Image (tube, rainbow, N blue to C red):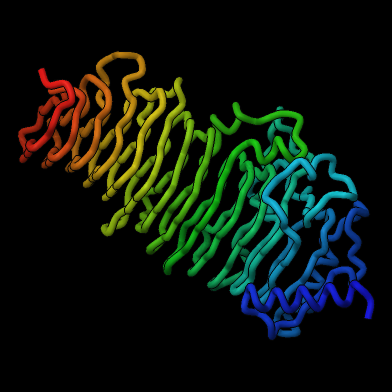
Length: 426
């Protein structure tokens, strides 16, 4: 028994243990004359392999380490897993795109100039992508060109459930993951990269979706093969995470740096739990909420920062129910939160810096809706909270402010203020 056969058997056993698919058939693309690093277009052959695996009842298609050239689009049919070798999310060993490159890399060329074109990978029910890196060799950090999404839900699928993306590096996609077609039970875990327009988009999810350990930073492109960092472009164009309709989205440990908008919740309505999420150095808003479903957006252990030249609020709530707990707001920002309508709660939060230009801008401005601020710390001298005329109700209690000039109340609604303490009482 040669080493290649032994290695294939080990992959089958390990894949079954890790992914619960020990009974599925294992296929190595080397057995189908797919040769990595040869620069030839593998699109048709890969699709043919997937079709055969699907017709056999599904299984794992293993891509050994190397570069696979894809000029078109790949349909990952039901019960099929694309499995590569993914040792680290990024590293200097990737520089140069040589045959010595470690890991499984898909070099994507299709759809250049068309963000609405066919995605690189199209997922169907119970299909998954694991352990690969996606790279667009023709993308220039100094002259960004649109491309279709790297991974999306297939337009050919009528009903999609149980799709997953795990252990994936998206070096420089225009749009990373687009799960905005009707579906249920998506799972995105351990994804890293430098998306340019959209990192992850979720919409049309009618049953619980999960996103874990997803981090976006321009350094993931810089460390791979880029002569420069597209910081200016992403600060003007990138939205890290977009949530449309999702009926209970569970998000854990996600981060984006340098985007225009960190997290955007569209008016189509999301509800869910967001724990340990962060957005740093955003040029417009770290958190933008256009609306939510009635159960609301629950955010715990977050950190949100706007860039020094940003005049917009770090958190902007246009409508909906937003509950933020044990989170920190810092950096040279102007206004931390702006609330137009809805119910917004800040509990056990740290408001560290605001009013960077010393113009008397409040940390939190409520123009309408209802507001609760409790058990929080406002670390800077000056106006902390402004309550506008259209605010229906507010409860400001149990906080610590720097000084007693902490609030302006213009509302005729039911506004309760009490049990607050001051570090520098005047």
